Amino acid sequence: MDDLVIDLSSGQILRNGISLNLTPTEFKLLVFMAHHRGQVLTRSQIIEAVWGYTPDLDSERTVNVHIRHLREKVEHDPETPNLILTVPGIGYRLVK
Image 1 (cartoon, rainbow, N blue to C red):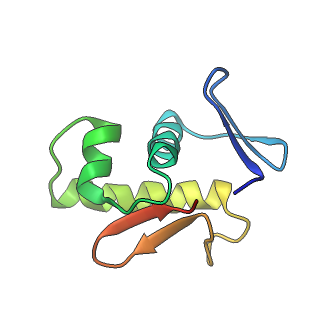
Image 2: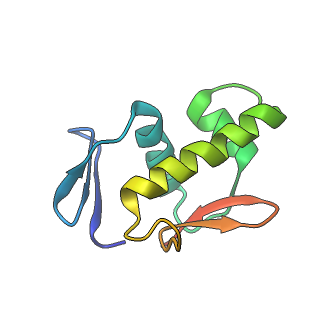
Image 3: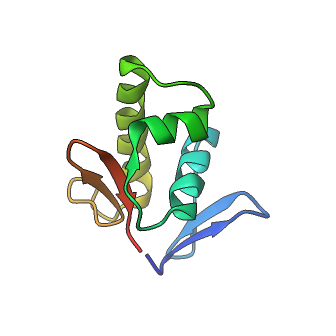
């Protein structure tokens, strides 16, 4: 993860020195996960922190879609992620 830089002051995410074009939601999602790096985060925790409301089944599926889009932008190979990992039956974890 050393080549992924989150610059809060400029609102930029850099991967290998290249600025990534994230949506505001993707940015908030990545920053939230970075603040809890190494911890397993449930979809409910993510919904409450990033979207600000109580989760339901549909909103939890929304997390999956946003994670997939975020992986497409930050992972070297989104099909075999090594930054944002799925923890089956629980949620996601951003590696240390």
